[in-house]
Length: 304
Ligand SMILES: Cc1cc2nc3c(=O)[nH]c(=O)nc-3n(C[C@H](O)[C@H](O)[C@H](O)COP(=O)(O)OP(=O)(O)OC[C@H]3O[C@@H](n4cnc5c(N)ncnc54)[C@H](O)[C@@H]3O)c2cc1C
Image (cartoon, rainbow, N blue to C red; front, side, top):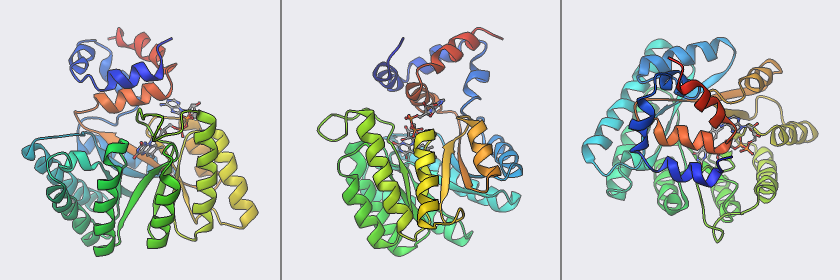
C-alpha cells in the first residue's frame, strides 16, 4: 500500500495534476473532496450544508504563489466570495492561506493583501480564519495574524497539535483573547519540530483541546478522529461547557455521516469547503490522510 509520506511527496509534484486530469473519471473523483471550480459551486454546496444545520468556511484553493498577479487575483476572489456570502445569505466565513496571498513574495505585501480581506469581512460582519501551513511559515503567519487581530478582531488562527511549539502558541493566542482552530497538522515535518508518533500527536491534541474549551473563548475543534471527538464531548460535559460554546470542524466530503450526526445531536458543526482550479496539492493531502482512499480514486478514475 502506498504510504502517507509518498502521497505527501506526490502532493508537491504539480505536474501530476495534468496526468490525473486526462482520466475520464477524475472530475467525479475530485468532487468527493472539492465543491467545484467556481464560487457558485461552493455556494451550492454550502446551501446544502446549511439546510442540514451545518455552517461552512470558504476555501479558494491555491497555495505558494510567487506571482503578484496571482496573489492579487486571489484577494479579488476572496472579496467576491465575501460579497456572494452576503448576497446569498449562506452561513459561512472564509479561510485563507498566506502563501496564496504573497507570503513567499514579501511579508509586508502579504500583510496588506490579507488586511484587505479582513477589512472587507469586517464590513460584512464576517470572520476570516488564517490556515496554518508548513512549519517554515509558522512565525510569519503568527506575526501577520497578530497585527490583523489587534487592528480588526474578526480574525482567527489555526494551530497544529503535531508541532512541539504549539503549547506556547496556544498560550499566547489565548492571552490575546483570539479564536483558535485546533487541528493535528497536515504537512510532512521533520522530527525536530513535530511529534513523530501519532499517539503523541493525539495526546497533545487532547491536552490542547482541554485548554481551549476551558478558556471561555469560542474555538474550533477540527478533526475527523472519533477518539478526539469523544474526548471533546466528554470534557465539555464534565466541565459544563455548553454545546454552543465551541464548534467541531471537518473537511468537505470527509466523514459526512459523523458531520450530520454531530449536528443532529446539537453540536455546532462547520465544514471547510474548498473550490477552485488548483485542487491538486489539497486533494493529495486528503489521500495522504487516509491512503485507503487511493483505492477509491483508482477504481473511479477509469469510469467515464
Ligand atoms: C476544518 C479543518 C481545517 C484544517 N485546516 C488545517 C490547517 O490550516 N493546517 C493544517 O496543517 N491542517 C489543517 N487541517 C488538516 C488536519 O491537520 C489533519 O491533517 C486532518 O484533519 C486529518 O486529521 P484528523 O484529525 O482527522 O485525524 P486522523 O488521525 O488523520 O484521522 C482520523 C480518522 O478520520 C478519518 N479521516 C481523516 N482524514 C480522512 C480523509 N481524508 N478521508 C477519509 N477519512 C478520513 C479516518 O477515519 C481516520 O481514521 C484541517 C482539518 C480540518 C478538519
